[in-house]
Amino acid sequence: MKKLALLLMVFGISLSTYASGGNVEMEVSSSIVCGMCKNTIEKGLAYTEGIKTVRVDVKANKIYVKYNDSKITEQEVKEAITKLGYVADDMKPTKEAYDALHGCCKADGVCE
Ligand SMILES: [Cu+2]
Image 1 (cartoon, protein in one colour):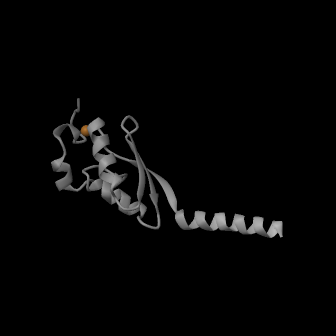
Image 2 (spheres, rainbow, N blue to C red):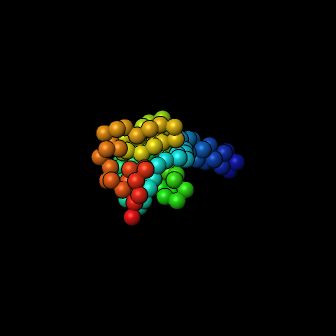
Image 3 (cartoon, helix red, strand yellow):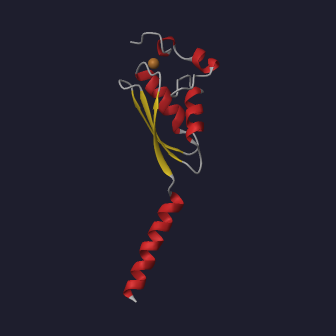
């Protein structure tokens, strides 16, 4: 009987992990110039449905995103990044978003 309870418990835990799970981490190469870019990306993505955490590494030019793949796809995360004015791997930023960036945050510019 104890064994059965234990089995049910283990099964229950793995089920709940599965239900709430689907959390995946991805790494995106971007066009980050400075700390302001970091803020723009972190704040911009933080409120996107399905995105759990965002970490921007300015030096490495990378964005690390943890997301729930039952709510948002890798492609959609990248699109969200391009809509903020930044490169997401092989995807270019949308022109409107890029133009709206602070001058120093435009990838070819120099930022203080
Ligand atoms: Cu910047």
